[in-house]
Length: 194
Image (cartoon, rainbow, N blue to C red; front, side, top):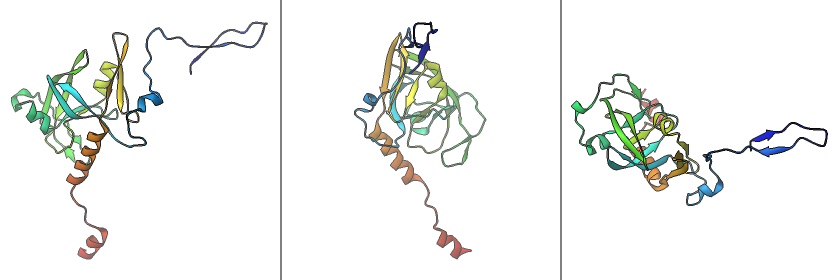
């Protein structure tokens, strides 16, 4: 809790009063976990309106510095190579491989009444997700994300709005990612072939 210290006078000890905020505060409590399976290590996955369509399997990653669009969404939005702006900086995928982007595209992302234009880097690599929403989107809207609570919160017209994640879809995406991973040779087989 934040406290404001008032100057002490000779009549007694220093008084502590809670700091009063003139606007709503974004925070999470144990009540925000109601409806989630606890404990868990699930990614924060949700449905967002991107380019005018409700898009499922969007992962919110506050550790990433760029919004990413994967082939399923690129094809689903019927985008063409000529719709993309050049983007030539290589990216590193989850499996540690270098990926060269196909390009970049700016699309509207609607979050309740708020609509912001976001630059997506389009990559042609497998992912169980359709897109990754990262710090640029989070910071533009002032979103606070909590994987533990499986939701994001943000202010809109002095109200706290929230979007709930979907743990079932997050688990499906994890299974799909593990299933898609190439099988590694066991160390015994590697030693025999040497």
